[in-house]
Length: 209
Image 1: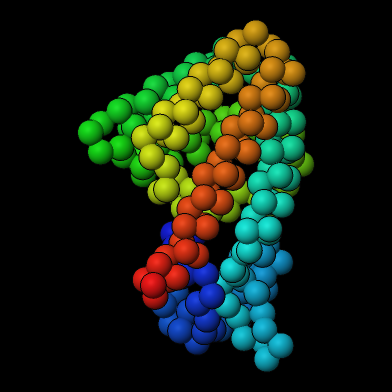
Image 2 (image 1 turned 90 degrees about the vertical axis):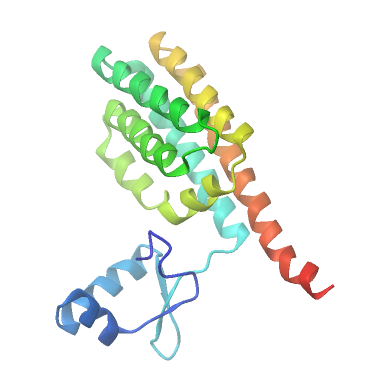
């Protein structure tokens, strides 16, 4: 529910209501909430109430910076280790990304799905379970979703083209090139999210004016 956006940032979480929704007792719900808190999906108040975490722009920039470093490292390792089958998988999913964004109304859901698989294949090719685990704590799907939702066609096409450049670097086993492309790819995603975040903050002020 948090990942899909059904539970918005700042929403209070009731153990009793969640237990009823999930059809379980409150004990597994309580355990799940503790885990979600450790993974920064939720925060707990001084009165021990649980809320969906709200990240500031500084928090998000920090997460994107760490993601850029880690995914850059993953891209370098992948360039040195990727096999022909994985490379063809990447090409296939990037073709589907191209199809999703080429329609009259870009299919953002389809874009997100193939984009997720594209980056997962790179992590698999990197062959580092520790790196995969660390990135799992940083790539929050709500953030990725909101970023893509605010992409215009130009940003979606740019993402596809950056994937094409990554494919070229992987085909040449050039880890330095792959690192540079991936780092820039993630930084651009952050600025797209930051622009949308600032626009949302400005909306109430514009309405009041």
